[in-house]
Length: 435
Image 1: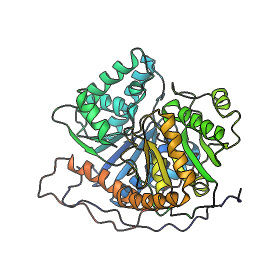
Image 2 (image 1 turned 90 degrees about the horizontal axis):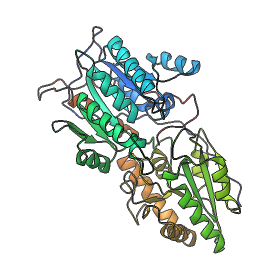
Image 3 (image 1 turned 135 degrees about the horizontal axis):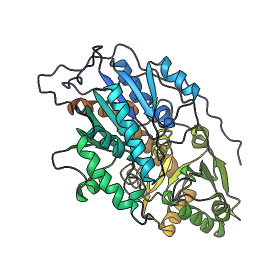
């Protein structure tokens, strides 16, 4: 097998974020600068998925506070150097203990009262549910923006008992507190409406994921065969990892020449997690499969692959898929919400039915037997990533939706132009973000 390529990092090109014109800034605090509070379930997401978003708010003159369950000292110093105030609150991502959940709501309500923010962004299931409940406790409500990055364990097909019904009840109670609700794909939007979770007068929008920095993830040349597939994500059954390894075993038994790298980690707090013992059993006897573990930077893994593969059962919108597309990798993904609308089937990748091992195996065989098709689909994937999923455009949409939810009329003052190019907040911790 050829020696692996090493990704050489290039200086990042700065580009202005496109902004919708005619949207007013939110009400301003006593300092004359709009105050924004962003609530996340995990501090790592602030440094991976929200860095461009926070940079844009800083460039627009916002005073920013970010709230998460914990911060390291280095993360605190990094945020403070950017002028961002970190706040902690209690949150257990997987807990269903009522007392702990109530404590989360109480602590969030205290932060909301102390910060007196003009706009509050809540990212992810528990921040949306508990942030929405906390907003209900305020006398004067700020402009709340709920960003549904994933549905939570209550919508998992393997969930049983009271959890699904309780989570839906919490959504019904929390979502009326928000001025705007943003989904990452239309399927989740339709599902929430069909289940009656969205108030009739609520404003909803679709913003395509968290975006990808197409400058930091450039087109990268493909190595010579054998074809190498790469999976990046948490080791969960709902990511289609069991089906993927069964497909790999089928290819191994047929004598196909291929490689499969698994990049990720065991999310042991998740009800759907694959244990180390289970994963070892699934890869036993498959010399083509390489367990790479968790990588803080996946670009080397993508650079040394030909095809990115994620046969997930459901996504908000996979950031890893966007990163692979940006680097010019063909995609195999499933006909599931948050997956099927990322690529064009037969143009930038192949879409297979959910949980269908036979079709997944066939899709892998197509690329193994046709390296030219891998390159053609990879080029199309890069083009699509730049056109639809560039982080600057996605961030601009997210901020513009918040301005619209402020209730500004047609004669509103447009937002100020950017006076300086944004500077990225560098990730100071290992990447384990959404999904």
